[in-house]
Length: 196
Image (cartoon, rainbow, N blue to C red):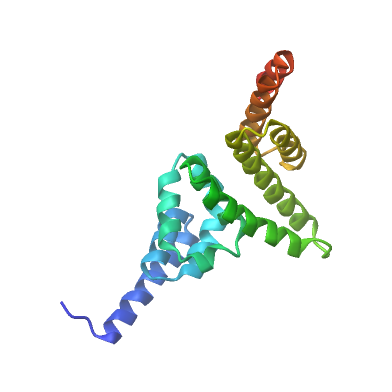
């Protein structure tokens, strides 16, 4: 079947309307899907950024990672939240070099924000981003066997992460416990892991 240019435009318009409807009716995953099908990557990135934590907490990592494959990298790199997801994906997939590349993008974002006036919501967002970045850095340190850096990065991550960010706080606490275990401080390791 050969679609004319007008038909293709109409189909794209219908897909975007579907995305808008799903978004308005609180179906973010479907809204993201239709944005991607319509190749409206900007909207897909916006929706994914707002909903990525909720989607991943449901265990839908592969869904998120599939979407990130579909989105051109130039849409992802300016968005630190998605760079963190990419960094985590590559770290857990065994590609620490690629993970570090995405963390560098996050670091660049944070450097641009430094010294600029921010609202209290922006300040909290920057803290969360930096906290997650430090968390992933700690896991990379563990992979490299750099225990002193691992301890520094886990402590910094815990000082930055929101008390509501239970998933990341637990992961980081477990990593800090591991780090102390590696140094032979077993009592400290036990106490930290108990709190995790």
